[in-house]
Length: 285
Image (cartoon, rainbow, N blue to C red; front, side, top):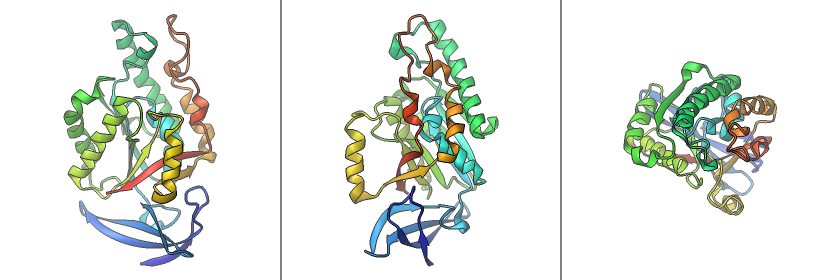
């Protein structure tokens, strides 16, 4: 099946493209993927995805967002979550660690504070995702110890496999970028990638970045490589920016000073997560 379509400026800068739809049967469901080619130059665009604005016959139904900590899902793709829900998709969120070390980088790490913070951050993420439109029952907590996820990768992978092994399986899976600086983010990337390989799902993989190891240089290098790879996409969330802003405000423990031992908040500049577009690094199985 081949069709000509005009792509949206926010998600593909390539203008008029040819879409080739392929099918793959998994778990009893037929998945359709779109292969984009620039008509003028017959140049392949390495973005294969089930996009409702391009092809209504393959609109995604089940979407899973995997967050290493309780706030990463909102910071990294809160606008996209709200947008997908508005399109009729079902979104499930998996929070991998308990968030107890949310203040540890600021030397606030007493046992009583760690226990209290676990509860606080769980309540924060439930309120934030509710604002985005995600029902409470669609938020799952794996409760691995914050800061030590590398020690539990195999156990975490088994749990993620159990969550992804559904019928129908998720069409899109969102998880942290492999180059993020936090070790829990990189561990979550490995866990998710391994789970998807184990299940051999045709899910489209969207990696979101919170903070890269080389925060100033890394994104520039990625942008340069994207000129060749075409693996970065930009999703317009301008209509959902106010919703995302309101959701982020629920993370008081991370955006405010909550202890007398703090000199600054954990998140120094929340505005950097409040732009009209969210960036993703896209891979296919």
